[in-house]
Length: 423
Image 1 (cartoon, helix red, strand yellow):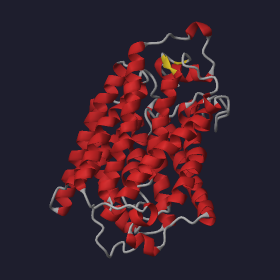
Image 2 (cartoon, one colour):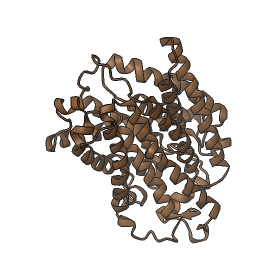
Image 3 (cartoon, one colour):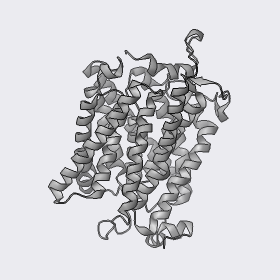
Image 4 (spheres, helix red, strand yellow):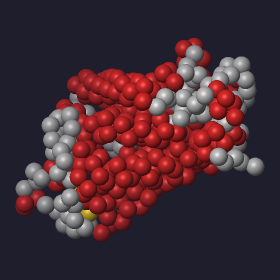
């Protein structure tokens, strides 16, 4: 597989296999950009995703929903420092990394990852590890025990997220060596989270009264504010994944904006045509669908490819979040699978179709070989996330139970689990 030195260098440096004469020096411009990108990706979770999800639940569950995103950010930070980063981004076998950097051992303030401090790279990747389990919470919103959430977040992050990140983004990972293209997390973040969310929704079951009682969002103002923060933060998510302030980052920023805009229009017009009225919630959901779909392809496609991906993802994710969910009768509360799962699958597969080496610098193989690799990467992530999530949830159910009681659910998680409420 042809690839660019820019793509390989950070991973080679981390893997300890770059030759001494190839080790670069610190670049202050790249470092500044990556620090900004890191802050932007954290901004996507806090407060972006928290508000996006918080506005879509019922009023009696808004604080509990905000708490999930906020607490996950703290929990994953500690977990990542202790062992997550080491297992994901140190050399190991094709499946998992090693323990060389537990508690950041050997990661000094002046060690480099490519042309940026390794500390910055570690923090940047931490923000991805934070938002992924936070995305899953949208699938089982309003009904999971907080104790179960804590155990699930720890187990899922170490058993599912970390291995997939290693497969795709670390130099010894089996999908990395196969030539799988995932610029910023189509497999690692979105398919992983979306499939896990679908499994969780199926295993936990529907909300009490689902399909019979009104469960409309309590505050769409919060939702559109959160969606707007996600849109802005996504520039760090995608353009930051270039790991440099360069033309690849600039193109990733352009394709991110184009795909988000196109998907917004696609979702809104589909909804307008089929339901008679365009909605604010539809516009917000469409934007996120486009952002999800472009994520694996952002640094590999041009603006035209991004436009097509956005138009496709808006319409297809609208179908997934409405028709498919109702047809199969599962309660994916906030459409974690409908948007992230389906959007991630689309982007991960279609990057083989729309990827261009004029942008990717030789990283894209011929159509059919690349499509085969993308299908393998997508299928492997789906299977591993589904099986791993199901096992983790089953064990947690046996230990502490997954779901609050019907009485607690009707009372609302804010009061039942946290002793707080919104006036």
